[in-house]
Length: 218
Image 1 (cartoon, rainbow, N blue to C red):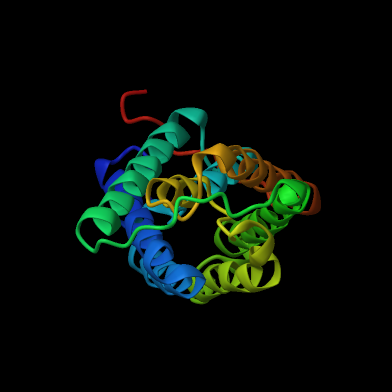
Image 2 (image 1 turned 60 degrees about the vertical axis):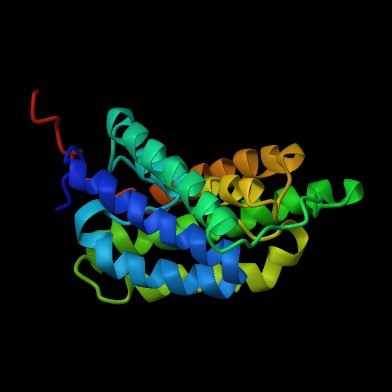
């Protein structure tokens, strides 16, 4: 079981999120999915390999983490997003046009796309990483990364296919996305993650989570 209150978990979340966003900023959905897959296998046994604030929220609602545990994950993920975007901008010199990619009449479609994509991602994530029936499986990295790639192909053209608030922040800094539309990704991604956890809990009422790991000082 990973140690939520160990500094190494936050470092792993930083590293995994960093390379996920590096891949997204430089090579789009394919780069993001491949980076995500390998980072899940590298860090899943240490931190749970969320690499996504929406998945951390889903884990919280699932009952596998407390708010006190989730907040440092969110901090590590968003700091990693900033760091990755700055590396892409200032070292690799890859900068977006800075234009808002979602047209005014496409806002509703973009919100729906991000909710659906994040819902699918969080639903798969919870099923392959937190259920008794899939405990110890070896396919979770491919399943989660494959979901990101599939959703990017299916609905990504309507929203840019972030499905992750940290990715959206990183791409705003790197200017692939624009700050005026960041609310879409914050609201829709967190909403999709929360909805997936609620649905998951309803379907899996008999699969109760073990209590979150307590603080070493408690």
